[in-house]
Length: 116
Image (cartoon, rainbow, N blue to C red; front, side):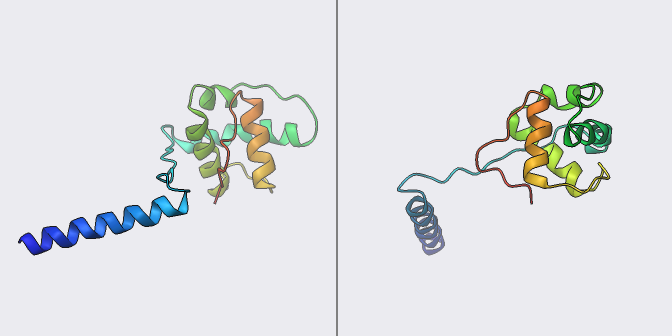
């Protein structure tokens, strides 16, 4: 039993050392964003995004209130999920359009966020 505990400790230390080396000696951040809303509701954002893409000023309601109260990372995750599920029904340039919609609704795309 003590041998198993020793192996576990060595394994954890080895993994920690690998992560620290990858981030200049600091633990690497892992974004833990999640979408606390039903992403199906974000289908209403299609008109807003379509208007923004075509250089008009669409109404912020009902889209923006859905994400405006969220942390930036959570808002980005929600919109990303809606885009990936094709709930918006638009052909998108994901990095640009994601940022455009978030900014219009008062959120910011977190640095390094990738919508995959």
